[in-house]
Image 1 (tube, helix red, strand yellow):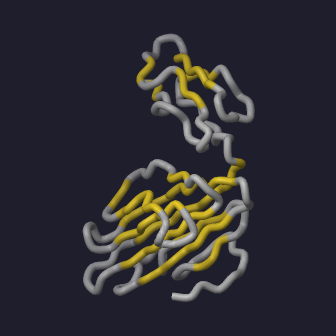
Image 2: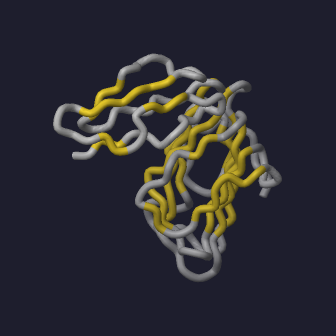
Length: 185
């Protein structure tokens, strides 16, 4: 499939080049209805040089074991594979690139179809992390721009136990060390 160059912030259909700094929602064909049989879709995401990409999913449901979305950390399917998603997911941890490009390939077989998926993406300067959030019943001690090496400390409100990691540190690749803190309800 040959991709045409254009800027897109929202795509419905089958593939395309996404070049806006942030964009979405992007969906599988016919979403929220079922995608078709024998789909073969490619999305190339390119954000400004020096940035990284964070891919977040609102929903994901494909035929398990036969219909796949493969996410590559680079400009084509020759890049390192990051995720191979198939089946139903109630939640997917955001996928973060190591560079300013990401390539996604969706394929379905000739048999069963499902609702498919919907995702969005944002870009951030390399060396910065996205806001890790503040869990319910929790307190965070740092509300800055979250640069590489910065540590965020979580505490619980009175009467709530800490579950997870109390301190997380922004890594140079834009991810946080340790699991995000979870506060028990």
